[in-house]
Image 1 (cartoon, helix red, strand yellow):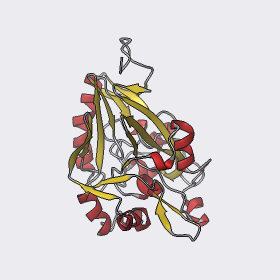
Image 2: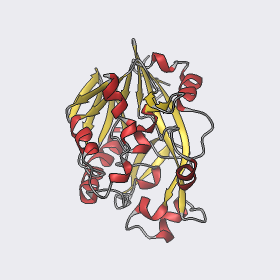
Image 3: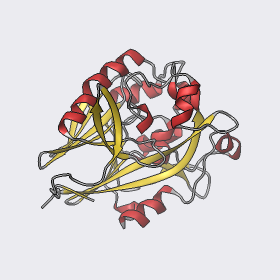
Image 4: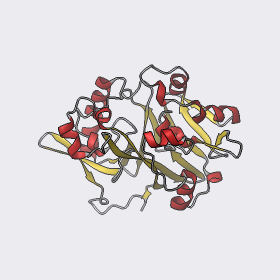
Length: 289
């Protein structure tokens, strides 16, 4: 897909499963189960959709999925269903070799967003998956990962970022920063104090990657908020600010964890917000032309 001066590709990492009750917080099971049918362990199906952006000489990967370093016990617990390693998916879908990725952006360092930062070498050591890339994460998120909250401690696995410190590839960024003209990363508290979202603006169009603020299409309704969020009231306030704007301005909305349709529009009808499948520009405008 061409989006202004950027070429964009969606690179799914792997399917996995988390408890449906945890994913929808105070929303009753009788409601969320209609949108996301659970399995016999009450887990719902999800994916990790990384976003590839090609701009000039830069080959950028936003998020790296859950990674392939999991022992069999934990892979079964999370229901990880992997067809191929992320680096092979990147090559197959984008034509870009792992060595050609120049920038990796992590919105935060939870294992399902940064797990593919590293992989195991022949001796079992965690090493950078993308050996020539600069890895970007906010300084605030890095500091939180090194001293996490009791509620999200299990989501931070040091093998996903410490090898990047050792290799000199990790770059700590401010709360908001510009990667390239029209490609910005901004901190949006709620899921945690330091999680970030990604905003792309080209030719008067906006593509917004919501990370874990709105992880799936099913989370578009304002009160549908994850139980994992450390600051759910702040999540609600951010959704009330961003989602109506997305509907008014016709943003492309990218939902990282959606297992089927990660790229959508948001529409508001009768005071309610919902996601609809993106089917191209309604006015015939082709971004980039």
